[in-house]
Length: 116
Image 1 (tube, rainbow, N blue to C red):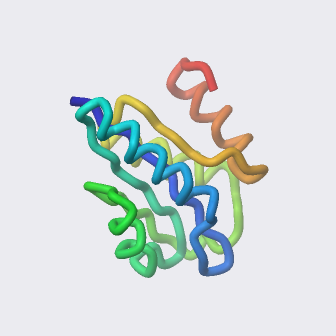
Image 2 (cartoon, rainbow, N blue to C red):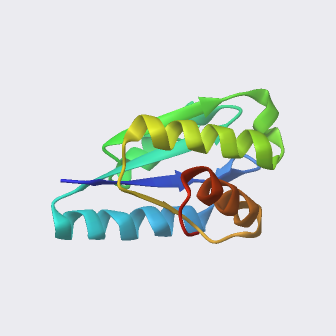
Image 3 (spheres, rainbow, N blue to C red):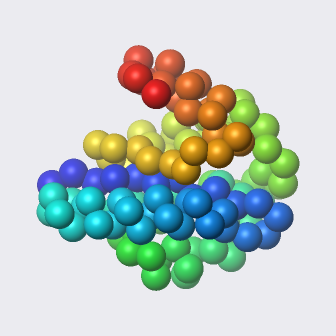
């Protein structure tokens, strides 16, 4: 049984709707394959979003909290997502395709020697 890790992006104190769509789709895929869904929140106060993410079916929720995440910075976000993905042991890492994650996705692929 494999898990799917979903990066749930936030912006200006709200969860991005596209991230919730990815989380919902991951839940359907995990149910079809007998897997589970985990989520990662990277925000100055990720605890504010944990309950909502759990309602969307995340079995485990990894949080990375730092004031630095008030703004989008590729290098710290890449490091945080890499650490969460490594800790989760997920077989699949999913995220919404937004302008703010396109560079991050490529950087993660390079770290894992994988296709983006």
